[in-house]
Amino acid sequence: MEQRELNELLDAVAAGKVSPDDAAVKLRTEPFSDLGFAKVDHHRGIRQGVAEVVFGMGKTPDQIAGIIANMFDAGQERAIITRLSADAAEQVEQLLAQGLSFEEGDDVPDMPVFTYYDLPQLACVGMPPEPDGAGTIVVACGGTSDIYVAEEAAVTAEMMGNEVVRLYDVGVAGLHRLLAHADELARASVVVAVAGMEGALPSVVGGLVSCPVIAVPTSVGYGASFDGVSALLAMLNSCASGVSVVNIDNGFGAGYQASLINHVK
Image 1 (cartoon, rainbow, N blue to C red):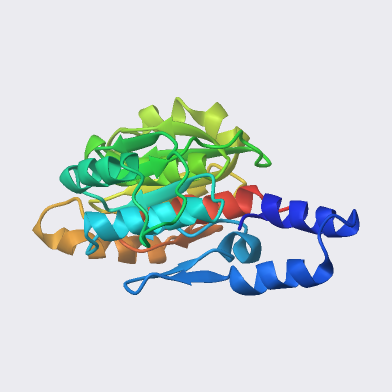
Image 2: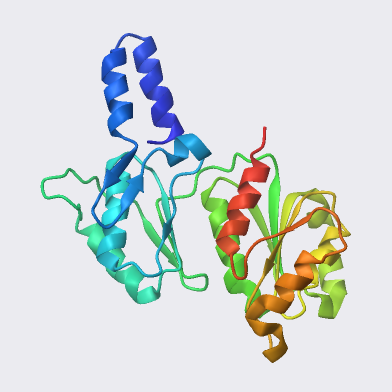
């Protein structure tokens, strides 16, 4: 159940179209569905403002499709699947197109459009909502090799109702490339700064903007980068104020956090 559905249910109770007892039963029986291999959380959107997101790695296409079908059975309008290979995405899309339901006899609605993003290995079911955030989220990355993480952040933020501006390949090896976008940075409500190698980009961005900066270390780099640990430590030791750090390659976490900040009322 999403916030919109909860509001509709409460309005129906207030209008006398649904009894308080019937509403209580619906709320009591809807918190999650037990599929055996997964307990799908239908009330996360009410509690946290964002519906459950499916982590695809380690799940079979049948399991993923079963979870997504159950979400839409419960009224969810869109879903995100992260860390999903292209082969698995193709199978999931086919299963959803067949109207897969975990339990025989379930009514499964027609599935919305399925979009797969190859670079971040992320799939979206349904269309992004109209942006309703306070401002713009800027996603900047140091090099072209970091785009796979930056795109995970950008698409996540867009699916959560944010306007996103992408600034790619603006790393510290050529600061003029970043400074050429000073206007976009100055207008941002949040900046997600993605970088591998020495991980210096968030510190530079943090010195240019007055908004929160979310730093994302990537596993891009040579031997002494230790698969992103060097960038992670550099970002944690940033001398710029207002910089927070998420885990290595965690574009999703950065996009989610940026959306929360951009929706603070």
